[in-house]
Image (cartoon, rainbow, N blue to C red; front, side, top):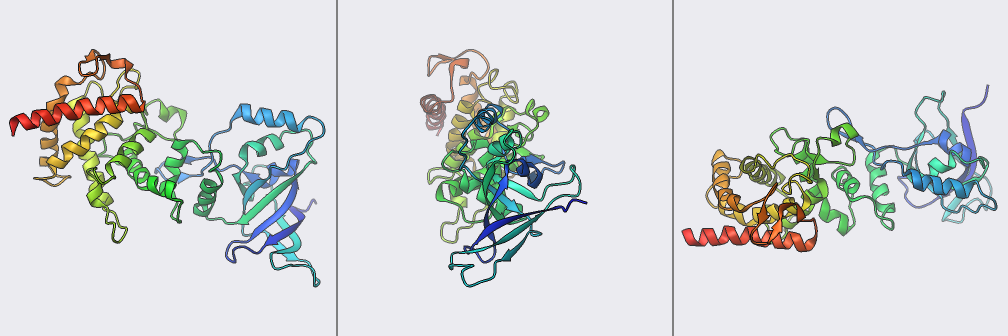
Length: 380
């Protein structure tokens, strides 16, 4: 009976005493036996699973063409998350370590059957791994860095960090950020709270956006109903979290805490009123409604900062009064909006020529805010 273990000479890198890190080599044909891809998805309860983007077939094809050619040099290694069942046996002798690394043998257990889960997960290099599994040079040695971590949170953290040179799709990063609790780089940290709020808007039963937001984990079937790009909502919420935004007062800068419940209530109240003010434009694909387009989401988000400031002067964000007052405020701009037909008078543009560009977002935002403020001024 074939032993279900792969043994490789390895270096244990003395980097983190709590997370063992090994450098070793596998044959190209062994990658598929040892490691699997944790595709991003959600279970029936909405819990996020995995973290990897879909296969890029053209990219894999290009790598495979190179691997199947002659005179191959493939220094691009893989990063694997290894199971706690791996065993490392250090070599004996005075020269087995230099304080930075220890020489030894790494034992990786293999699954009992081809259909059983593989022991490791690919953190970086999934497109390369797919090509390596198909190359005719199945004995080609491949460099591997493996760290022992079965905690998917650590895996996601490392996945986000190693994909900074070649940026990940923004929607994938948006969906992963709420699941990472370790300290993040400043750029990613600023997007975490908006990502958490977008996640709530897409899942909470009382949210007008429930099921309408395109997520990296969404199946093709679910994406047919999703019409709003999550990055547009993230950008709108990021704007509202700046000092001039309506959500900013609910961030406690002194102790770093945030009142996410109140923020969520403000967002649900406002966007529910938007939905009910423009029922004919809500939930349609962006090609049929610019309200669901990035330019509409971003511009209405900026209007929210002005409008909800006034609403919250007299009422709590999650009250029925807040909804009714918000509906009344939106009624000021509603007659001037052309989300599905007609022309925007203040812009001299047909409804479907508005694009998700900085220029058009600024132009539309200025029109909406100017109409709202001028009307408020004339009635005060």
